[in-house]
Length: 332
Image (tube, rainbow, N blue to C red; front, side, top):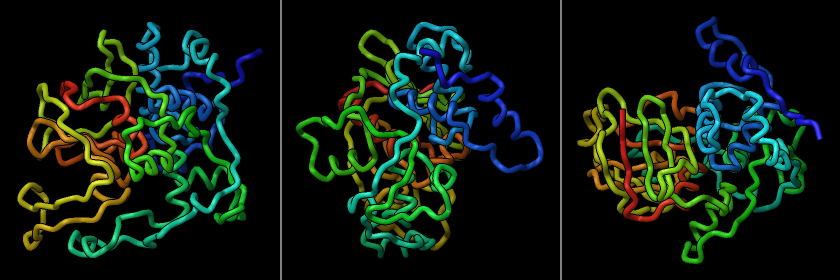
Protein backbone atom coordinates (compact mmCIF):
# COMPACT_ATOMS: atom_id res chain seq x y z
CA UNK A 1 0.00 0.00 0.00
CA UNK A 2 1.40 3.38 -0.95
CA UNK A 3 2.20 5.80 1.86
CA UNK A 4 -0.47 8.44 1.49
CA UNK A 5 0.78 11.15 3.83
CA UNK A 6 4.19 11.93 2.39
CA UNK A 7 5.54 15.34 3.33
CA UNK A 8 8.34 17.41 1.91
CA UNK A 9 10.82 19.23 4.11
CA UNK A 10 9.58 22.47 2.59
CA UNK A 11 6.04 21.74 3.76
CA UNK A 12 7.17 21.27 7.35
CA UNK A 13 9.65 24.13 7.49
CA UNK A 14 7.76 26.80 5.60
CA UNK A 15 5.61 28.11 8.50
CA UNK A 16 8.68 28.60 10.71
CA UNK A 17 10.56 30.43 7.95
CA UNK A 18 7.58 32.66 7.27
CA UNK A 19 7.84 34.21 10.74
CA UNK A 20 10.64 36.51 9.55
CA UNK A 21 8.47 37.90 6.76
CA UNK A 22 5.60 40.36 6.90
CA UNK A 23 2.54 39.14 8.85
CA UNK A 24 0.27 37.03 6.71
CA UNK A 25 -2.67 34.72 7.05
CA UNK A 26 -1.71 31.30 8.43
CA UNK A 27 -1.14 28.60 5.81
CA UNK A 28 -4.12 26.39 5.01
CA UNK A 29 -4.61 23.19 6.94
CA UNK A 30 -2.74 20.34 5.24
CA UNK A 31 -4.24 16.91 5.98
CA UNK A 32 -0.94 15.16 5.22
CA UNK A 33 0.80 17.22 7.90
CA UNK A 34 -2.16 16.66 10.23
CA UNK A 35 -1.82 12.90 9.70
CA UNK A 36 1.81 12.97 10.82
CA UNK A 37 0.91 15.16 13.82
CA UNK A 38 -1.87 12.76 14.84
CA UNK A 39 0.42 9.73 14.67
CA UNK A 40 3.14 11.45 16.70
CA UNK A 41 0.55 12.59 19.26
CA UNK A 42 -0.71 9.02 19.64
CA UNK A 43 2.85 7.73 20.09
CA UNK A 44 3.68 10.20 22.85
CA UNK A 45 5.89 12.54 20.80
CA UNK A 46 3.63 15.54 21.12
CA UNK A 47 3.70 17.92 18.12
CA UNK A 48 1.89 20.76 19.88
CA UNK A 49 -1.47 21.87 18.53
CA UNK A 50 -2.97 19.47 15.99
CA UNK A 51 -3.42 22.05 13.26
CA UNK A 52 -2.22 20.54 9.97
CA UNK A 53 0.63 23.05 9.74
CA UNK A 54 4.37 22.64 10.11
CA UNK A 55 6.68 24.55 12.41
CA UNK A 56 9.00 24.24 15.38
CA UNK A 57 6.81 21.98 17.52
CA UNK A 58 6.43 19.44 14.73
CA UNK A 59 10.17 19.53 14.02
CA UNK A 60 10.87 18.93 17.71
CA UNK A 61 8.46 15.99 17.77
CA UNK A 62 10.03 14.48 14.67
CA UNK A 63 13.51 14.71 16.20
CA UNK A 64 12.30 12.97 19.33
CA UNK A 65 10.60 10.22 17.35
CA UNK A 66 13.72 9.79 15.21
CA UNK A 67 15.93 9.45 18.29
CA UNK A 68 13.59 6.85 19.78
CA UNK A 69 13.83 4.79 16.58
CA UNK A 70 17.58 5.17 16.08
CA UNK A 71 17.15 7.33 12.97
CA UNK A 72 19.16 10.40 11.93
CA UNK A 73 17.75 13.30 13.95
CA UNK A 74 16.91 15.67 11.13
CA UNK A 75 13.57 16.99 12.38
CA UNK A 76 12.35 16.46 8.83
CA UNK A 77 9.89 13.94 7.36
CA UNK A 78 12.58 12.19 5.34
CA UNK A 79 12.09 8.80 3.72
CA UNK A 80 13.43 6.80 6.69
CA UNK A 81 11.14 8.63 9.10
CA UNK A 82 8.09 8.16 6.92
CA UNK A 83 8.83 4.43 6.69
CA UNK A 84 8.99 4.30 10.50
CA UNK A 85 5.65 6.13 10.78
CA UNK A 86 3.96 3.97 8.12
CA UNK A 87 2.89 1.10 10.46
CA UNK A 88 0.80 3.59 12.46
CA UNK A 89 -1.12 5.00 9.48
CA UNK A 90 -4.38 3.46 10.75
CA UNK A 91 -4.63 6.47 13.06
CA UNK A 92 -6.47 8.55 10.48
CA UNK A 93 -5.96 12.34 10.49
CA UNK A 94 -9.57 13.22 11.29
CA UNK A 95 -12.58 11.67 12.92
CA UNK A 96 -16.24 12.68 12.52
CA UNK A 97 -18.33 12.44 15.68
CA UNK A 98 -21.94 13.04 16.65
CA UNK A 99 -21.75 15.30 19.70
CA UNK A 100 -23.02 13.81 22.96
CA UNK A 101 -24.56 15.67 25.88
CA UNK A 102 -21.33 15.26 27.88
CA UNK A 103 -19.23 16.79 25.11
CA UNK A 104 -21.19 20.05 25.10
CA UNK A 105 -22.06 20.18 28.80
CA UNK A 106 -20.97 23.27 30.74
CA UNK A 107 -21.26 25.37 32.71
CA UNK A 108 -19.50 27.84 30.41
CA UNK A 109 -18.20 31.20 31.59
CA UNK A 110 -18.62 33.26 28.44
CA UNK A 111 -15.75 35.48 29.57
CA UNK A 112 -13.19 35.28 32.36
CA UNK A 113 -12.81 38.51 34.34
CA UNK A 114 -9.42 40.18 34.61
CA UNK A 115 -7.80 40.20 38.02
CA UNK A 116 -7.27 37.31 40.40
CA UNK A 117 -9.58 38.93 42.95
CA UNK A 118 -12.51 38.70 40.54
CA UNK A 119 -11.54 35.21 39.35
CA UNK A 120 -11.49 34.04 42.96
CA UNK A 121 -15.21 34.76 43.16
CA UNK A 122 -16.05 32.25 40.40
CA UNK A 123 -17.11 28.67 41.22
CA UNK A 124 -14.71 27.33 38.60
CA UNK A 125 -12.26 28.54 35.96
CA UNK A 126 -13.87 26.35 33.33
CA UNK A 127 -14.19 26.75 29.59
CA UNK A 128 -15.58 29.90 28.05
CA UNK A 129 -17.67 28.10 25.44
CA UNK A 130 -18.50 24.65 24.02
CA UNK A 131 -16.13 25.42 21.12
CA UNK A 132 -13.20 26.01 23.46
CA UNK A 133 -13.96 22.77 25.34
CA UNK A 134 -14.20 20.73 22.13
CA UNK A 135 -10.94 22.20 20.81
CA UNK A 136 -9.08 21.18 23.98
CA UNK A 137 -10.68 17.73 23.92
CA UNK A 138 -9.19 17.15 20.47
CA UNK A 139 -5.81 18.84 21.11
CA UNK A 140 -6.43 21.74 18.78
CA UNK A 141 -7.92 25.24 18.53
CA UNK A 142 -11.34 26.64 17.63
CA UNK A 143 -9.83 28.04 14.42
CA UNK A 144 -8.80 24.55 13.30
CA UNK A 145 -12.29 23.21 14.04
CA UNK A 146 -13.69 25.97 11.87
CA UNK A 147 -11.28 25.02 9.07
CA UNK A 148 -12.26 21.33 9.28
CA UNK A 149 -15.98 22.08 9.23
CA UNK A 150 -18.02 25.05 8.07
CA UNK A 151 -19.56 28.17 9.59
CA UNK A 152 -22.91 26.39 9.34
CA UNK A 153 -21.81 23.51 11.58
CA UNK A 154 -23.84 23.45 14.79
CA UNK A 155 -22.16 22.94 18.16
CA UNK A 156 -24.97 21.17 19.97
CA UNK A 157 -25.94 17.69 21.11
CA UNK A 158 -26.59 15.48 18.09
CA UNK A 159 -24.65 17.62 15.63
CA UNK A 160 -21.96 15.94 13.50
CA UNK A 161 -18.51 17.55 13.69
CA UNK A 162 -15.10 16.64 12.25
CA UNK A 163 -12.07 16.81 14.57
CA UNK A 164 -8.36 16.01 14.48
CA UNK A 165 -8.15 12.37 15.49
CA UNK A 166 -6.98 12.70 19.08
CA UNK A 167 -9.09 9.73 20.21
CA UNK A 168 -6.94 7.50 22.45
CA UNK A 169 -6.19 3.87 21.75
CA UNK A 170 -7.10 3.04 25.35
CA UNK A 171 -8.91 4.58 28.31
CA UNK A 172 -7.64 1.92 30.71
CA UNK A 173 -6.47 4.33 33.38
CA UNK A 174 -4.94 3.08 36.65
CA UNK A 175 -7.42 1.61 39.12
CA UNK A 176 -6.46 4.09 41.85
CA UNK A 177 -7.37 7.13 39.73
CA UNK A 178 -10.12 9.16 41.41
CA UNK A 179 -13.46 9.48 39.61
CA UNK A 180 -12.92 13.23 39.15
CA UNK A 181 -9.46 12.82 37.60
CA UNK A 182 -10.67 9.92 35.47
CA UNK A 183 -13.34 12.23 34.10
CA UNK A 184 -10.69 14.83 33.22
CA UNK A 185 -8.48 12.24 31.53
CA UNK A 186 -11.46 11.01 29.53
CA UNK A 187 -12.56 14.52 28.57
CA UNK A 188 -9.05 15.40 27.35
CA UNK A 189 -8.76 12.16 25.35
CA UNK A 190 -5.61 11.18 27.25
CA UNK A 191 -4.27 7.83 26.10
CA UNK A 192 -4.18 5.20 28.84
CA UNK A 193 -1.64 3.25 26.78
CA UNK A 194 1.26 5.49 27.75
CA UNK A 195 4.89 4.42 28.23
CA UNK A 196 6.34 4.37 31.74
CA UNK A 197 9.21 6.70 32.52
CA UNK A 198 11.88 6.57 35.19
CA UNK A 199 13.07 10.17 34.81
CA UNK A 200 12.60 13.35 32.80
CA UNK A 201 14.96 15.87 31.25
CA UNK A 202 13.74 19.42 30.67
CA UNK A 203 15.88 21.20 28.09
CA UNK A 204 15.56 24.98 28.17
CA UNK A 205 17.21 25.71 24.82
CA UNK A 206 15.19 23.07 23.00
CA UNK A 207 11.92 23.75 24.81
CA UNK A 208 11.31 20.07 25.45
CA UNK A 209 10.46 17.68 28.26
CA UNK A 210 11.91 14.24 27.53
CA UNK A 211 10.68 11.09 29.30
CA UNK A 212 13.32 8.37 29.75
CA UNK A 213 12.88 4.74 30.81
CA UNK A 214 15.11 2.78 33.22
CA UNK A 215 17.69 2.22 30.49
CA UNK A 216 17.81 5.93 29.65
CA UNK A 217 15.95 5.44 26.37
CA UNK A 218 13.68 8.22 25.16
CA UNK A 219 10.06 6.97 25.27
CA UNK A 220 8.05 10.21 25.06
CA UNK A 221 8.58 13.93 24.53
CA UNK A 222 6.51 17.09 24.96
CA UNK A 223 6.97 20.76 24.03
CA UNK A 224 7.18 23.04 27.07
CA UNK A 225 7.63 26.64 28.13
CA UNK A 226 10.39 27.09 30.71
CA UNK A 227 11.00 30.18 32.80
CA UNK A 228 11.89 33.74 31.84
CA UNK A 229 14.54 36.38 32.43
CA UNK A 230 12.94 37.26 35.76
CA UNK A 231 12.18 33.67 36.80
CA UNK A 232 14.72 31.41 35.09
CA UNK A 233 14.39 27.66 34.97
CA UNK A 234 16.09 26.28 38.13
CA UNK A 235 18.89 24.23 36.59
CA UNK A 236 19.89 21.09 38.41
CA UNK A 237 18.48 17.74 39.50
CA UNK A 238 15.20 17.58 41.39
CA UNK A 239 12.57 14.96 42.19
CA UNK A 240 8.84 14.73 41.68
CA UNK A 241 7.16 14.95 45.08
CA UNK A 242 3.50 14.55 44.16
CA UNK A 243 0.61 15.50 41.90
CA UNK A 244 -2.37 17.73 42.57
CA UNK A 245 -5.20 16.99 40.14
CA UNK A 246 -7.65 19.72 39.12
CA UNK A 247 -5.94 22.00 41.64
CA UNK A 248 -6.94 25.27 43.18
CA UNK A 249 -4.29 27.97 42.81
CA UNK A 250 -2.98 29.96 45.74
CA UNK A 251 -1.94 33.33 44.37
CA UNK A 252 0.77 34.93 46.48
CA UNK A 253 1.89 38.25 44.96
CA UNK A 254 5.19 38.05 46.88
CA UNK A 255 6.25 35.23 44.53
CA UNK A 256 5.49 37.10 41.29
CA UNK A 257 7.80 39.82 40.00
CA UNK A 258 5.01 41.30 37.89
CA UNK A 259 2.39 41.40 40.66
CA UNK A 260 0.49 44.65 40.96
CA UNK A 261 1.11 46.86 43.99
CA UNK A 262 -2.33 46.33 45.50
CA UNK A 263 -2.59 42.58 44.78
CA UNK A 264 -3.50 40.42 47.76
CA UNK A 265 -3.19 36.74 48.46
CA UNK A 266 -6.18 34.82 47.16
CA UNK A 267 -7.29 31.30 46.29
CA UNK A 268 -8.48 30.70 42.75
CA UNK A 269 -10.94 27.92 41.95
CA UNK A 270 -9.90 24.87 39.90
CA UNK A 271 -10.48 24.56 36.18
CA UNK A 272 -8.71 24.16 32.83
CA UNK A 273 -8.55 27.95 32.44
CA UNK A 274 -6.82 28.45 35.77
CA UNK A 275 -3.17 29.58 35.89
CA UNK A 276 -1.91 26.00 36.30
CA UNK A 277 -4.53 24.22 34.20
CA UNK A 278 -5.71 20.75 35.16
CA UNK A 279 -2.73 19.45 37.16
CA UNK A 280 0.24 20.58 39.26
CA UNK A 281 3.22 18.18 39.45
CA UNK A 282 5.14 19.26 42.54
CA UNK A 283 8.94 19.37 42.54
CA UNK A 284 11.49 19.22 45.34
CA UNK A 285 12.44 22.81 44.43
CA UNK A 286 10.17 25.06 46.53
CA UNK A 287 7.46 26.90 44.59
CA UNK A 288 8.32 25.15 41.31
CA UNK A 289 6.31 22.59 39.42
CA UNK A 290 5.17 21.22 36.07
CA UNK A 291 1.65 22.25 35.19
CA UNK A 292 -0.98 22.89 32.55
CA UNK A 293 -2.03 26.16 30.93
CA UNK A 294 -5.16 27.97 29.80
CA UNK A 295 -3.37 28.95 26.55
CA UNK A 296 -1.96 25.82 24.85
CA UNK A 297 -1.13 27.66 21.62
CA UNK A 298 1.53 29.69 23.49
CA UNK A 299 3.59 26.68 24.60
CA UNK A 300 7.18 27.17 23.46
CA UNK A 301 6.38 30.71 22.30
CA UNK A 302 6.08 32.71 25.54
CA UNK A 303 7.58 32.89 29.00
CA UNK A 304 6.51 31.44 32.35
CA UNK A 305 7.15 32.32 35.98
CA UNK A 306 9.98 29.80 36.23
CA UNK A 307 7.83 26.68 36.18
CA UNK A 308 7.42 24.19 33.33
CA UNK A 309 4.19 24.82 31.44
CA UNK A 310 2.52 22.31 29.12
CA UNK A 311 -0.75 21.88 27.23
CA UNK A 312 -3.39 20.43 29.56
CA UNK A 313 -3.69 17.23 27.54
CA UNK A 314 0.09 16.72 27.54
CA UNK A 315 0.66 17.29 31.26
CA UNK A 316 -2.31 15.04 32.06
CA UNK A 317 -0.69 12.27 30.01
CA UNK A 318 2.65 12.90 31.72
CA UNK A 319 1.06 12.07 35.09
CA UNK A 320 0.39 8.54 33.80
CA UNK A 321 4.05 8.08 32.83
CA UNK A 322 5.77 9.13 36.06
CA UNK A 323 5.68 7.99 39.67
CA UNK A 324 6.45 10.11 42.70
CA UNK A 325 10.18 10.13 43.36
CA UNK A 326 11.10 10.22 39.67
CA UNK A 327 14.20 12.26 38.87
CA UNK A 328 13.81 15.56 37.04
CA UNK A 329 16.91 17.05 35.40
CA UNK A 330 16.69 20.67 34.25
CA UNK A 331 19.38 21.76 31.81
CA UNK A 332 20.20 24.78 29.71
